[in-house]
Length: 314
Image (tube, rainbow, N blue to C red; front, side, top):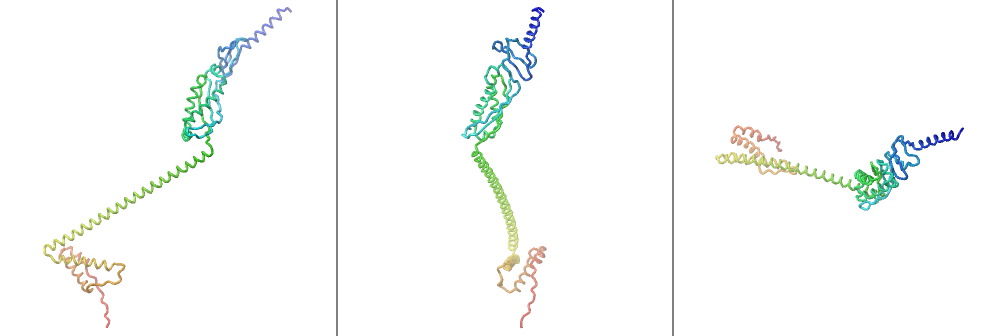
């Protein structure tokens, strides 16, 4: 066995070792950078790749999948000098492995500090009420600012979300009292509106009733005026019985009012009862003569009632 027989197998083994040294398998979701004498030359994508052994070496192993970065809790002073505790979460993805590897040192730390700084800047320019009610607007503004700043690092910030906003306990208590006062104010306003509406409806009802009463009085006055005109025309024609009828009618109405009074127990008559009965009978005959056919009805209305005879004491 000569020395050549020993050298050839050794060379074959060395060649195989060199070849295996230059073969690189990249897993899915990762990109590797290749450096030749310390300088970036190319990027290896997922799959089987070859490099020059002993000259090229693997530089940075970059994760190309979307990653989550938790933003720790920090205190923020709002525009109206309220101190709140805020934490959040950021999502980013590496799009360019060489830029992410060589443009910034400590990629995650850089994204974290950039996000925290912009959270203080954005939320510090807002009032507390605006801060608590416009969380979507805050997230959108943070995403736009952080993504624009991190674009030069070869990454894409996909989302920035504020998880919790915690005001101090005394501030929460003050906000609860303010909310209760606002609700009480709304309840009082609604009650006042209801009372106002009720008063308006009541006033409209009184107005309608007054209008109806005035209309009734107007019609009564028209009827009285018409009756007076009829009597006046009869007098003008020389009919004295019409005047007697009118006077007797008023006289009878006055006696009826006196008799129906609740506080009258004794009625003093200015004449004998028989004279009053005779007067009532005369009214019927006068009405018949003055009004013709209609007088029969008037005669029936003023027909004198029968007065029962009372036994006289001997």
